Amino acid sequence: MIEFEDVTKRYPDGTVAVDSLSLRIPSNQITVFVGPSGCGKTTSLRMINRTIERTSGTISIDGEDINAGDPVSLRRGIGYVIQHAGLFPHKTVVDNVATVPKLLGWDKRKTRSTAMELLERVGLDPKLAERYPAQLSGGQQQRVGVARALAADPKIMLMDEPFSAVDPIVRHQLQEELLRLQRDIGKTIVFVTHDIDEAIKLGDNVAVLRVGGKLAQFAPPAELLAQPADDFVESFIGQDRGYRALTFVTAEELPLGPVPAELAVGDDGRPAGWHKDGETLPLGAVFQRGDSLRAAMDAVLTSPVGQGVCVDEAGKPVGVIDYTGLSGVLRP
Ligand SMILES: Nc1ncnc2c1ncn2[C@@H]1O[C@H](COP(=O)(O)OP(=O)(O)OP(=O)(O)O)[C@@H](O)[C@H]1O
Image 1 (tube, rainbow, N blue to C red):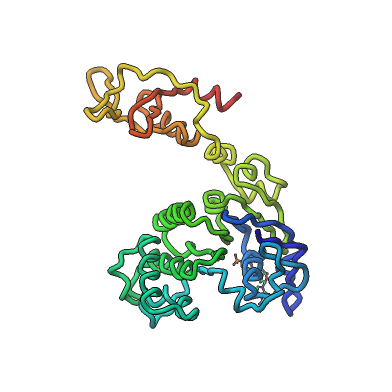
Image 2 (cartoon, helix red, strand yellow):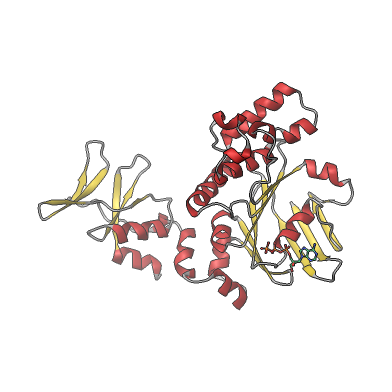
């Protein structure tokens, strides 16, 4: 656990970037700092690896004050990923990833094999290993940045707007990959973004900061959407709060109806469309029991007959839900 206790950062010109911040960042989860520009997100993040020193208060990792040891050894246990990846332009991809292991004096073979494994882990083709950063796309560079931060197997990863400089499609892919990676590696990740949707998607917990470096709310995303602490948080979350909250409710409780005879099923047993008036209409989206209510709603809305199909793990239909069934759950 990383704990901030009454932490303040005042820059030499008098700017208070972070004001009496107290919060507990749980281990092995993703905690996101989010808030408008200048609210102190980056400052808060960088105080954890002491690339910015706090003015007062205490930050501890697993109960130990980070000021007890020297900053260099502190940083060895903390990976750091920034916007534009911050790669060394004159080093190849594999050498970028190997930077920290080399500093730690690992032998050459182990360093290289670890670097190659990591490239694969973050979804990069090993063929790119000998390229230079300028020969990669923005999304590929970010992946290298993540691989480099993971190279020394740190317990903690600090990520400062790592996906902000790429286009929305690549950004979505990188977010999905981070979640997938995190399921394997279970690091303590502190992630900074100004994008509330990114915060809600990635965070196990979200810390919303307001300008002046004050904590407005610290909560899991579902709670943030359901119970914003005040008007600032509510307006920062933006429109469609109720609808977006459906992402965090599972379709488990939906009262499914039997699979109707009108559902066309292919040879593989999977639904293929809807028989209607001698035609086969497209199927629309399908959902599974463990998916969110939002996914179930999407299935109903995209179905040409207003019936969303629920499928099992094998993709076979187990039942359907319609508007009436949905509304019973939406308005208990
Ligand atoms: N070296 C510095 N000297 C003086 N003030 C600074 C310094 N660095 C940051 N600040 C100020 O501290 C406040 C918080 O900055 P910080 O970079 O932590 O915010 P942020 O939330 O990460 O912003 P952004 O989303 O725009 O990156 C801002 O008012 C900023 O101008």
